[in-house]
Image (cartoon, rainbow, N blue to C red; front, side):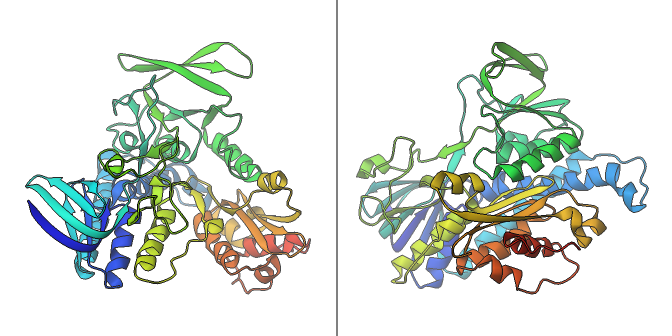
Length: 468
């Protein structure tokens, strides 16, 4: 068996793994990365963030052409959907980006190994690929194998009629009625794609509200906007069974508001009830790496497991399952192993729902402030009062800034509206540097721009918002 020696071996090439590898290479560490799939990039680039955003953008343009262009005086008739071409565009974007990772590995002298990587002993990774087995000796190992969709026992994936997020990205035709089980980020995003392309979409959510962990004033605006677009919601509903007969999928759910059992028929069911850490075949038990009852790897403040020299990042460890969180952890671990500080500010991890309108949040919600007993002040401002939003014809939504009442330090920011994912950045930066609502309010914002709404929300914290 061939053996190779490295300073660092990373298992998994998703956002956490490949960014960790690149940073380690930049810092002069002899680095190897192991990937079991044919392409690099993990779930995010291959069957997650990137392909879903490609379809979201394409479906928005399709909907604009068929429904909303008229308000701009642009009349379009005979709009047709070429789903095959839309999917091909999505696939090309994925191919371009995953191919780009290979280039970055070569540029930064990262050696890539294709195959299943398993830790067989501290400092030793065995890679089983098509050409046999290779042993990688490593001073340090980083586990970055990500997560997989949670499968319910009564909703087993066949990726045709009952689909995970992966199957929902490759449907061969637009469903007549898509049932989405789970009213979180993934369900709302992919549900909105197929709704814009012509499907009737019904979201069935166990909780009494969608996105229960986000600021509810913002979520209320989102739900109303999506209902206006045609999406239907059934909350306080516990799905208990499903059956497939011909082209019809029937789900059975318990109505926890009114009581009793009810059924709902569709032709595709998207199950989006969360994700769980993926560590199958990683060999954690071989070396005694500890995990919590939910399967997350236990780590210290430097992302090291209970076994010296073995680290874990991203969806494998507690915290939000987000690509950018994994990326920052990957960078921090690489820098720490190279003798630098290595730091992640978990208070400023942003979260985005790429629906239309978008939702973007960072920090504490009002509900969380109340739960923690924090004395706070909140300021809001609507896009309806913004000149650029009116020019775009995108006036649904608002910005909310939450600040500590005593210090005025920003502790939360929440946006629902056009380009929310982009607008949130300045709030994140302000929080990273300990900024106050006054700091945001006194900073120049070009006119007319959407981010003037951020400034007005900051002014509203001290009741000084202006009408534009």
